[in-house]
Structures are given as structure tokens and as C-alpha cells.
Length: 372
Image (cartoon, rainbow, N blue to C red; front, side, top):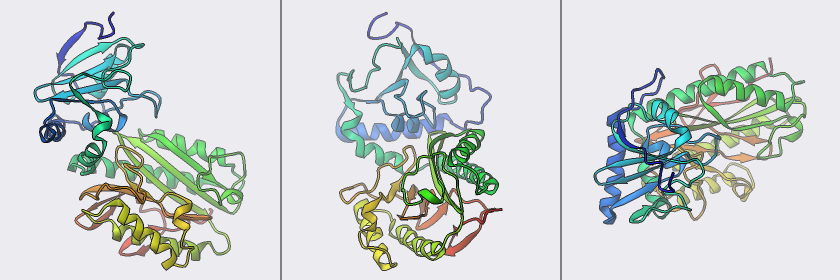
């Protein structure tokens, strides 16, 4: 076996397995068209894609890693005429039959498990653009979601939101954070998604912005935070159970900060400008003027948890029909859902009709669920 592959090369059209995946040749062709437009605009011959975000997007939600946040087990070379999928040989059967089914024909090249894939940092492809050199352009092309992606996203959001509701309703003050984290993970996996973030804070740890679960008991107030991925798409949401003095009033003001974030997220605006509006809204609603600096505020999402995270220097511009997960927070308070904003209308993907809400800025927004 050589460093350049096992010698097994084929052009294949896999047979779709009995799954619920909705990938089609038309979706794949549309995305290939976007990639080839990038090549044409730059006068380039080919591009090598090797990151999870770009691969999962191009391959219509394929699971391209084995450890949840590990390195991809395949890479893709796209030129004007052909698509070549380079895959680790020990992963070929699953990748072809379960992840690439329904996409149409492509060339397939296998590589030994111990050899770096073409297009990765340790094995660049001569004559092809390295993905990192056009990262902003790739983010932009995957930002505008296709109708089929929005449908997948809405289904995922509804399933994960309902799963979190079920765990929250069953929570008891004597439960530990770890027990509830295990229940959240179980519930997310049962939807067919992968839990990529599971944070739980009981009353004694609510000052922490990223409370990795411990054996601490919940007490009178609980925060649950979930990030889940299915079909390559990621939803994020935060929910609260119980009460403590002053929480309801602070939560109400924080929801107004979130409403300002939604209002500021309009197509064409740089994310840095959106973030500036969010930052200003903290003081406008009675919080410290520098509160926004104490934790990131979120940003676009989709095939990455934040794609990218909004900072004062982020030049990426808001696109129509793009997904966002803003997460304004203060000590002992946070609000977060995944939305798609289309034509100025905010569609909350992670809403659950069984969760109590109030209307803010025309949207039903979650409030704390009482303990049963």
C-alpha cells in the first residue's frame, strides 16, 4: 500500500440504506455549484475540503467523524469536472453505504488508516486551494440554508426541545447535576442526534457561564444547556427550572437584550456591528455596560456551533435564511435558542409548545419552568 492510496479507485453511486436521511443528488449538485463558483471567481482549478463543517455541509449532512469532535475520516477534492472522495479504508463500507448514499456518482479513493488524508494540513494537494485559505468564503456559501436544510433543522430543533422539556419536567431538587446531564445525553441520542454540549448547573453553581456537570445537588433553581447535532446541523438551547429571589425580573430584562439581538440581525450587516448593538442593549436594560465582555454572545450557527462566533473584529456579514444562536447572559441568567432569520422574520427552531412562554418582541420566549 502506498502513501497515495490503496489502489482501489472507483466511481460509485451508492444505494441508499433504510434510514431517514433526505440527501438528494439535487442538493449535492446545488452545493457543488456554489463550490465551483468559488473556484471560477478565484481563477483556481480545484479545492480540497477537509474540515467537518465543510464536508458535512457539502455531503448533505453526512457524519464524517467517529469521535464526535474528532478529525474527519474522509476528505473531498472538487474540480471543474469531478468530485473525488478520499476515505480511510477501514471506514469505507459505512461511509459509502450510510453517509454518501443518495448523492449521485463520485470518484472514490481509499487510503490506509495510518496515512494522512489529502487536503489535510500534513498532506496538501498540489494545484488545489487549501480550505483554510478561503475559510470566510466557505462560511458564506454554507450560511444561506436551502429549504431542505431548514426543514431538517426545524425537525431537529423540535425533537431536541421536546427531549429537554421531558428531562426538565422530571427533574427534582434532590437530583445531582451529573444525573440530569446523563438524562439529557440519553434523551438527545434517542432523537438520533449527537450531544456535543451538555451543561447543568444547580443553585450553588449558577454564577458559572460554562457549568460542566458535577455531583452537586440541584436545589431550588436549575439551568440546562444542550448542543446537539444531526444531519450535520447543530442546535443550541438553554432552559431554566425553578426560581430564586430576583431571578424573574432579571430574566425579563435579559429577554429584552435577546430581542435587541434579533432586531439587529439583518442581512448585509457585519457581525461586529450586530455585536455592538447587543453590547449596548445590556446597559439599556439595566445591566452593567461591560456585561457583554464577560461571556461570548453567540453568533451564526449551522454546521458549526458558532460559524463563526461574533466578536468586535468579525467581518462576516449576516445572510438571509441563516441560522443564529445568540446567548445573552448575566450572572445566574442566560437565554438561548436556535433560530433562522428569513426576510426579517425570526423562526425559533428549538421552541416546544409544552414549555411556558411570554411574548417578547412578537416572539414566544421561554420562561422558567416550575418544579413539579
